Amino acid sequence: MAYRIHASDRTAFKRCRRQWDLSSRNRQNLEPIAGFGPIDLAQAVRDALAVYYFPGMWEWDRSIVAPLVHQALERSVRTQAKAVGGDQADDQSVQETLDRGRALLDAYAAWAPTVDHFTPIRVDTDFEAEIPDPATPGANLVTPTGEEIRYCDRVDMLAIDSDDAYWVVQHRLVTGEWADHNALQLDERSIAWSWAWPQFYLGMQITGTMYNEIRADAGDGGTNATHPARHQQVHHRRMYARTGTVSGERLHAEGTDGFRRTLVRRGAAELAAAGANLAAEVSAATSTDLEVYPSPEPNVCARCSYRPPCLILNQGDDATAELSKSYRQRPPESVQEGRLGGVTWSMNRGAAPPRWPS
Ligand code: SF4
View 1 (cartoon, rainbow, N blue to C red):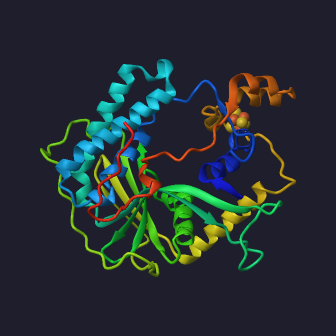
View 2 (cartoon, helix red, strand yellow):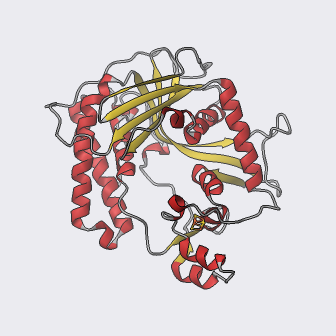
């Protein structure tokens, strides 16, 4: 048996240990019965972009791909609406989300070919990486009971450029200002992708992280493009096992008012430090003498689903009754048949996309 720490676990552990303790699959594994928040357009756009960049369709005419991208958006929105249920997902909000998403994706399809100087290799792909034990060279971290610890997450996209360099790509829907350049350089999750990927695919070094930012109101005025633009043909030399390169500028950004693409090169020392930091946090999270305490912070607590039991615990009372009434155990993670990152089918050039569930 392996002990899996997902990226969301890591974030929750550092944000608020009480929230992590209640929510993590490795802890109490509770979720609110009342359901989830509103439809997540960012997730729907990520799902649609996984089809836009699906490697097997990369050389297809974009006018053939465009309706499939719209279908992926609709599938994601309707699946979320079904999960949300109730008043939060009425027909009008579903339709408004779909209209916004389609306009945004059409505008994106007109812009992206100007900056897509790469070939997609993988989309929406899960990974699990063992974590080397800094105290014992050659050994991996295990829990106090001897279970192997694995760090897990899902990479939005892996791409290769014309210099034969691999990049991990993160799609972001932006509602305010563009992310500060320093914030992108410090983005822990995508740095962890770059560190973990070569552990998962031995020898496949990552050159850097690419941030694909899309403003939520992009395409508001429509797009002048009558057809989705054709993307550039980027030729790369080989697919596997190469040494990463860090030559070139550290950060490069380009874009328009609605879209921005930022590349950040990551060096070996930066990735090694990221691995060591992850090991330290994971060791703390799995230690037997771990203290669990709340870390109230207005912006975090305002969006926390565990406020009612947290308030009860803060008053020194027993939250068992509230947890039994309003929360339930999460079901085990199921393998979603037909999910793009499942990779049980060919992802290579010319491969048709899987049959998605309707
Ligand atoms: S309400 Fe705030 S302090 Fe309480 S569990 Fe949630 S995030 Fe932590």
